[in-house]
Image (cartoon, rainbow, N blue to C red; front, top):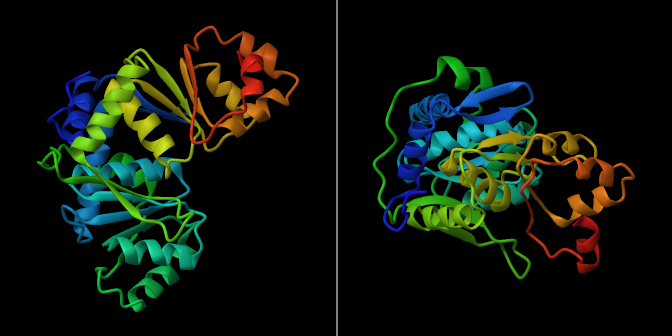
Amino acid sequence: MPDSSSEPFLSLLAASFERHSGRTAVVFSDESTRYGRLARIAAGAGAQLRSRGVERGDRVALYLSDKPAFLRAHLGALWIGAVPLPLNPRFTVPELSYYLSDSGARALVFDDESQTRAEPAVQHSAARGDARANPVKAVDLLAVETLCSAAEKDEAPADVKADDPALLLYSSGTTGEPKGVVHTQANLAAAVTALARCWRFSSDDVLANVLPLFHIHGLSFATHVAWLSGATMLVGPAFHPRHTLGLVDRATVFMGVPPYYYAWLDRPEFAERAAGWSKLRLATCGSAPIRPDVLSRLQ
């Protein structure tokens, strides 16, 4: 793992994509994507965003429930030096309007499922008259087939600096309105490489990732760590007490939250199934404390 003390996250990401170009990066359903192609997909998606007026430093809101499309839009924004803003696709129109206005987003990427909320939220955000915000311009989500094939390009990523913004996430807003938290290129690189070293990630690892990608747990702690390590990531649409077991059967690492483990412990077949996980070397639990009384059962 390279030293992240001075390298921007995007530089580390591009270097990993090139170094592991022949290895499988992402598997979703029956579709596998190698790292070399992932770089071309990122460049193509970035070019599409740029053609819609997105420039370096612009915030790009990602309001998507489709995970492969989310990853392509996320990479496209990163590749041109824009700042991805992952959002919960279940946000209501008023909630989405707040995030767009407060962040000063220049683009909103949405899919068919979220379109009915995205369009009125853009209009409502523009009408807020928030002096801090730039006008929001909706960007239609490109078809996944376009991003995977015709839109692929061989273009180098933007020349970003260590203190440039790389990612924008919002606090939970439990004591007031959610606040935007800016992660710089150096900040994101340091955090991701530290976790990769702590968890001893390598290109031999296979990560089962069913976490929401709009949350830092599923996006940075899982996806970014895997990509900087050259690992293979098996992406599931969402956690399912039975279907997710099949992903973990093939994995060396699983990252979850307490409700996942509670749901498994309630299933009679879990203990026998887990006993066969000979490849699994690491299972993590984050985002909330897990009840101490279940740890011995899980072990």
